[in-house]
Each structure stands twice: as structure tokens, then as C-alpha cells.
Amino acid sequence: MILVTGGTGLVGAHLLLQLLQENEAIRAIYRTEENIEKTRQLFADADKQVLFQKIEWIKADLNDIPALENAFTDIRQVYHCAAYVTFDPKEEEILRKTNIEGTANLVNLSIAYQIDKFCHVSSIAALGETIDKNKSIDETANWNPDSYHNDYAISKYGSEIEVWRASQEGLPVIIVNPGVIFGSGFWNQSSGELLNKINQGMPFYTKGTVGIVAVEDVCRIMIQLMNSSIKNQNYVVISENINFQDLLNKLADLLGKKRPNLYASPMVTSLAWRLDYIISLFTAKKRSYSRATAKASHSNSIYDNSKIINTLDYSFIPAADFLQPLCSTYLISH
Ligand SMILES: NC(=O)c1ccc[n+]([C@@H]2O[C@H](COP(=O)([O-])OP(=O)(O)OC[C@H]3O[C@@H](n4cnc5c(N)ncnc54)[C@H](OP(=O)(O)O)[C@@H]3O)[C@@H](O)[C@H]2O)c1
Image (tube, rainbow, N blue to C red; front, side, top):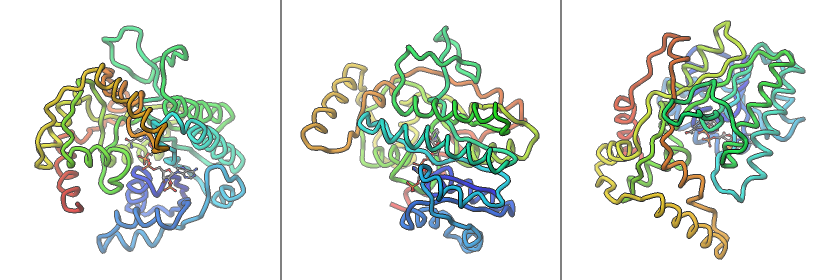
């Protein structure tokens, strides 16, 4: 039997669907019934509803070890997709607790229950950097603790450390490092928020670069790696590097909205995150635009996906082919 964490999120829900389509027996952890409903919507078609009924749901938080242990009976593989995703600096404590301590709990139980293999969903944010800024970043890039890293990146790096530590203790592991993941459903989180902003007519663009990938590719790659004899390796998982302006223009065209036409320079975005900070101080509102988001929007890092392509002889879905159906689905549900 396979255990999936994060099955009520974008990656975990799409992974559940692919695993069930391959006839795997699945157990998934959840925290609230309300969030299981989001996953159910992904299985709305008649043939998929039958698959959804096959999921064995167990209530467990990553930081509740006794509840988590209940989920481990008869498990042979674990896919760890759960994480807390935020760029609000006020949430540093919950990021550390969920992403680092939660992953430690999960790998410790995986060692104790002698499971066969563990797949961890990390991020390109947890990769290091190249000394020569013109070179692309791959799995060998070194993490420099003296460079600026946002709290989310630090928590993803810390969770990887727990997974590598477990591999040293004998747990066979796979780590995937995806770029920004696009997939249907879950419109109010992750990349769904970007579609919402464009749909609302966001006028700003920046000149950074971003690595993007379809959720279907991320899940397919995880399953292929877990079903292979490969272990103790990590892989950059992006389909392509794309300029922010091109991405925003493509999304605006596909959603039938005006293309963003106001360039937000680094000075403008640094004013914007400071203003957002001051507003959050006076209103107790959650931060909607942080220093981390501003910095990321001007980053020109390029990621190298050749290791996964060569290992699995893999062909990624090009951005043009996954953004078009994604935006059509978005428009139907809005
Ligand atoms: N989306 C992206 O663009 C992207 C890019 C690179 C890497 N990643 C990584 O991919 C993974 C999946 O991301 P996603 O986009 O699917 O995230 P998501 O849609 O925000 O889903 C997060 C999942 O984690 C669960 N979770 C959070 N805290 C938990 C806790 N304390 N105990 C148990 N479950 C908890 C959530 O459960 P609830 O429903 O109960 O909240 C939800 O199922 C994460 O590791 C993320 O860092 C994502």
C-alpha cells in the first residue's frame, strides 16, 4: 500500500489520481473534511468518482506523531507532498514546524516501519546557486548559507536535509525539485493565484525568469522514479524557463484579458513590499506581497532539467500545451 501526504493540495491530489489510475492501493492523510472536497472535485467525472472511493483517508497532521503512526500500517512506499507554502515572514515558525519537523517525523516513521522507498517533493527554491550567474542551476549547485534565502526556501532546504539524513540511515529516497507547478483545481493557492490575478486584470509585469512545469509531469516523474531501481538522487523538474512577461502575456491572452503593460522595476516592487508590510502592521491583515515575492519576480536564475530528461528519457509537456487547457478549465469554473 502507498501513503500520500498533501492529498488535499495541488500536487498530492493529482498524484492520487495518477496512482489510482495505475491501480495502486492508496492511503492519504488529511486534516479537514472540507479540504477533501477540493480533491473530490478533481475526480468529478463518472469514471474518476469510482477511483476516489478507493482512497483510504486517515486524519493526521504532520506534527501529530501518534496520528501519523496510525497511517503507517502495511505501507511500502511514501510520497510526501504536504508542506506549508507561504512567503509571509510572520509565518516562519509554522513553516519550520510543518516543513522541517513534519518531514523529520515522516522519515523517522518510514525508517521505523522499514518502508521500501520515500519520495519527497522539494522545490527549486531549495537548490543552491552557481558562482557564475550566467550558468544554469542544476542538482550540483551549492547552497550558500550566507546568501539571502526566504523562509520558505530555508524550510524546504531544511526538509531536504532531513530526507538526506534518513537516506544515510538506510531509507531509499527520491527528491524532486519542481519549479512553479501549474495544474487544474485549487485555484486559490499556488499558481492558481497567478491566474486569479491576471483574470482580475493585474496591470504589472517584471522582467525576471521562472521555471515552470505541468502538475501531470511532476506526478508522472515521481511515479516513474519510485518504480525504478534509482535511489538517493534528486532531480530538477521543470518543463522550461520562461520570462515573466512572456508568461503573463500568454496567460492574459488565454484568459481573454488585457496584457499587463506597466513595468514594475525593482524599485517599484521594493516600495510595494514595504507598503504591504506597513499595511499589515496596522490592519493585522496577512501579507499579500513580501520581500521574497518581490525578489523572486526579478530573479534571472535559469534551471537545467537535463538530469531527469537523460535519466528517464523524458519528454516534458511544453508550456504552450499545458497552459491552454488549464486556462480553458479555469474559465469554465469561474
Ligand atoms: N505549487 C507549486 O508551484 C510548487 C512548486 C515547487 C514545489 N512545490 C512543493 O510541492 C509540494 C506540494 O505543493 P502544493 O502546491 O500541492 O501545495 P498546496 O496545494 O498548498 O497543498 C499543501 C498540502 O499540504 C498539506 N499540509 C500542510 N500542512 C500540513 C500539516 N501540518 N499536516 C498535514 N498536511 C499538511 C495541506 O493540507 P490541508 O489541505 O489540510 O491544508 C495540503 O494537502 C510542497 O512540498 C511544495 O513545497 C510546490
